Image (tube, rainbow, N blue to C red; front, side, top):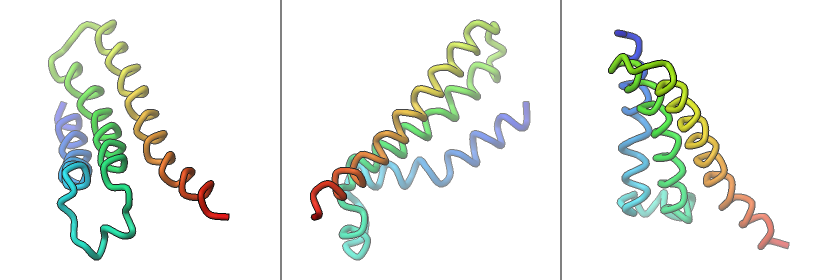
Length: 98
């Protein structure tokens, strides 16, 4: 059970503050040009972060296996959505440049 708390903390420390900063647009002007558009990137990081609590919290609460399995499937869907959101701006930018 200790490893679940450690995994949740390790996932939350880098992803949660950066995702919230990108989502609200509170990043330095030096990085703003490199990270345009910032809101979709913030949503992508938060979706990937959501996989950690979805995997961890049912196990910490000692939920039945069916609930843990459902939460794990939801975590996989959230991670896949986050990856798709992260790839979308890059694909859109390559289509716009000749």
